[in-house]
Length: 224
Image (cartoon, rainbow, N blue to C red; front, side, top):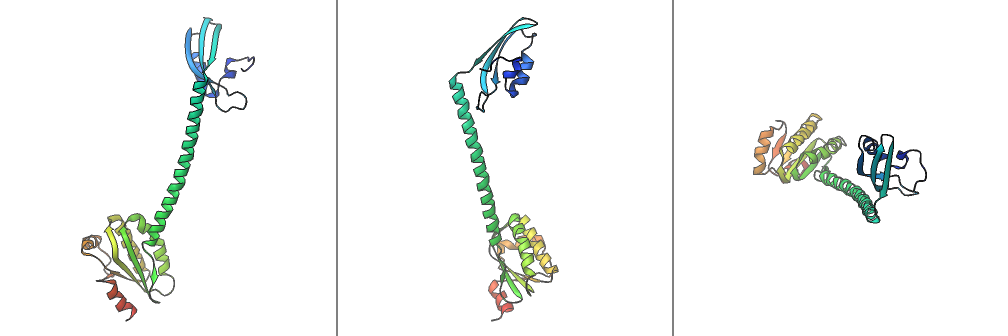
């Protein structure tokens, strides 16, 4: 298969070198082991074989190399194909994961839109659960939008809010506090009875105002 070679190691695959060096030694008079030969021609897969060694003395050994049958070659080829398909599947799953994460980010951004009601008053209607990831996603957008134009007042409406997650509410509290320090009046509307305990625990800034409903706030700040 490989022609005349000066060294036995010349025909073995690189990954099998250490095994051959370790076991083909005069200290072990007889042995049989499985190994791999170098690929032949344009093939890329090593050739699996059985190696039988019988030492006559410390200087001379008979070595018989028998390649495995075609069935093992077929199995190996099938395994390589499966491995290739698995790699493709993993890449596809990675792409789908990225698309899903982007969709979640987009959903989070839409859950707290910045709506300019009048020249000086804006509305941020919140939707869904108040989670940490969601609030971190909308933080920069809300802070940036508040500095555009002449916005003096921002209404945060909780009518469409589900559960207040502690970590998310903490981030939202920091956003509102930052808006206050940046010069905007912050008004919270639409808080449900089951939200009250969470708000009390978070101890919102005393300058942040609360009103019963969004309608009441719109009538007060946006005219009749």
